[in-house]
Image (cartoon, rainbow, N blue to C red):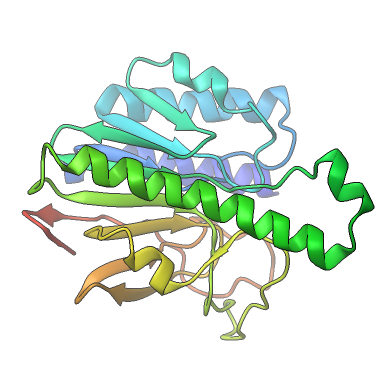
Length: 237
């Protein structure tokens, strides 16, 4: 089952990843699937408690997380999940945290045609992304040489499925590589698409979908993985 497979892979992570001596564990969303059960929340707590014991843990909400469903884990000493865009400063690196963004229609939207509502949604989400860019730029004024990373959950335009098919962009939260490049970061780490894939922007900064760490459908035939990101100075690999 999805639950059993996820639990097995999380055990593998807890037993394997500390050997890399990470400075932080970054989670790009979808830790939970829909409105979580008690068993799912307890399993995630065991996983996060083990990571938290080893290093700082920073995560963002994905499109599968219900509102406020990850708040309980912020009670752990070194764990923080963000439901709203914000800048998080770790020792040695600055994170621009960009969770899955939803648009909640207003009363005025009820009287508008669908294309006008879609335009309002795009404008609202664009303003929230821009506010995060500004916050990151303001943070970097006092630490211009500090490496910076965007940790997010979104559809990246041009992403493909495990079978190599392009994913159509609908009404979901989507960003292009040019949108990401405008952050001027040294690495961009994203959850959402289950098939791992990479791009580069800004003359070599990696944009990485590690993909889901375990199979969630029988159609996911690609090798599964996590990503280990090394940053030295302003160079990420």
